[in-house]
Length: 437
Image 1 (cartoon, rainbow, N blue to C red):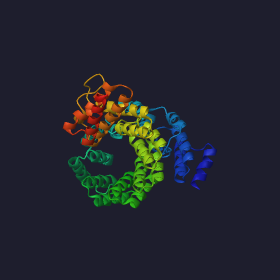
Image 2: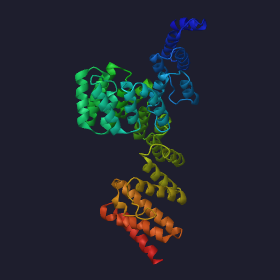
Image 3: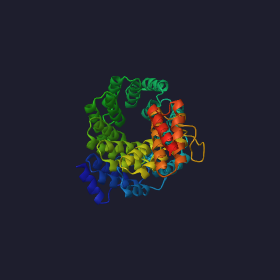
Image 4: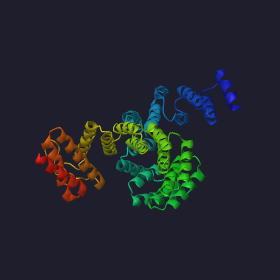
């Protein structure tokens, strides 16, 4: 009835921007998201300073945006409110979205440099691109400037959790509890604190309490799914993650969690599907593509695995070494030695660039040995394997001197525990074979 009355008024051109906003809310509540989005845009074009309309528009955005969507949003308004909306819409978009976010955020920041909303966006952006130290610093400033605010405290606690800063997370939990024990954000912060202490049942209890206070509190559903994964309760984890995507299908963490859960259940087909959903939402996040590649590998779909790992190299750098190593192995297993050598060489160069296993001791970037790596032991052994493959590859091409240098890396690294004894013995045997020729 409400929809019919508003539609009749709209057809008679007897409705203002706020009437259109109410009609858009009605469409949204009835599940007519396309109509809600279009009506919301009309309302904003008539009066762009209704922030509730912008928030409703954000909730109507498709999980994977259509190419024309962003242009429509850009044209919805002309003032600073449009820039605030676009900054909020792009705040968790990594990769290509970084410059776009900065453009819109800068406009609002120049107008309201001390605004909690504006500073909070900057903090969330640092968190989104995994610059945790900087994000924690900004959140600390927000806490000092407005000690009685609980908004964004759940994200602050996520950052401290990832940093494993139990002391500061405990302080934050105590402060939030003192301010208001019955806020969902408070329950989320306390749940994260217990999770960091490996008290997973207590953590689940607080996440459930948060959901009793707000059944659509997305963070609690997702974090509770993570806890059930830790407790090896896969059925409960799936239920929690499914609730999360029902609340907001744009939550890549929940899709990723579903992928992990089904991978634990050895249901690779389902896991790949959910990882693909996560990767579609975070196309420049290498973690999504590496997880998808690993899942394809485990199910024997090596061609798709190669495509996924290559896609990972276009994204964030944190899993770059993993993607390069897997690509090298996949090409080696397929008998594509030239391609394998290319990726093994990339792995060596990555180690040099990141202060890892190989130094820049000469023009070929070969120096002090695999054992000098700041990589972990498994990665050092991986690099030793790369050197052995490259040595054999160069020897086949008649480059004995280059092959010897690669082998020397493995042998020289033995004293500092860089390569396994098996790798070292293999390198010595190859050195003797090359010398005898």
